[in-house]
Length: 312
View 1 (cartoon, rainbow, N blue to C red):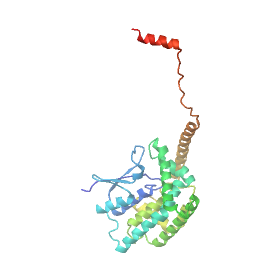
View 2 (tube, rainbow, N blue to C red):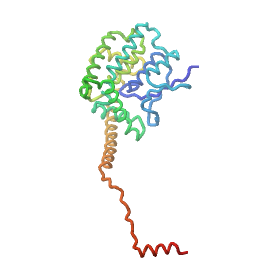
View 3 (cartoon, rainbow, N blue to C red):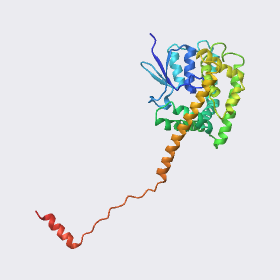
View 4 (cartoon, one colour):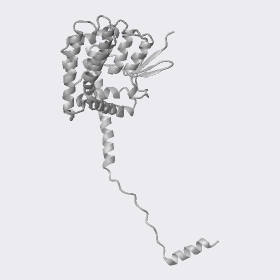
């Protein structure tokens, strides 16, 4: 009897099984390899740590991070790469490194750093998935973590300022997308007709960028000009996740957009209220503690008081 495999991950939207790239990588690989995952979507009852998602849980193991989860699944005989040659295996590692170096910083910036996208889409969506009051705190922490990750890897000389870093990461991301498009060509998958680890990573990184409706879409616009990459994402969604090209009907999407707008207004209103309370506390005058006046007795009163203390 196969061991139970449970995956805790962020949920879906916009026609995606998950809007979280790393969760999508694991979910896609499980579909490709036939791993029978039971998916537990994070909701308002969740009490885990944000840095651990996605998490794979078995009877004897708890594994986090996509690369470690995929390695664990391979050891359980769920291997999507068994038909690859040694050269294709080496190419897989090289392309994954390229994705993490060139494309991931721009994806993080699009979701978590670009102000319009963060406040109108990312923050409200993630806040809706986690319990109060963590919903008012955690998205901001995740945003700062994404920015720190970008600056740690790309904020080195000669790119000292954030605007310079932003311009460079988007140039690199567009070049990476062009390279992926040329490599895929007219093939269904990157190594022929069978999906592999590389396909899971590319799908996980591209699908949220392709499907989520952002107000600022410079990288999304570039991706949508590369029709073979868009077709690649659509084919995986329809073939492995049974999701149609549109994801949901136009009327349903309008309802989702309207609900998201209401949620955005609510979350921003609560955040503004908390920030105003913090500002009021910081601006209120902080008076030093007052010392109580010491009553000084006259010599006659001291003598009388001493006499009273000694009296039975």
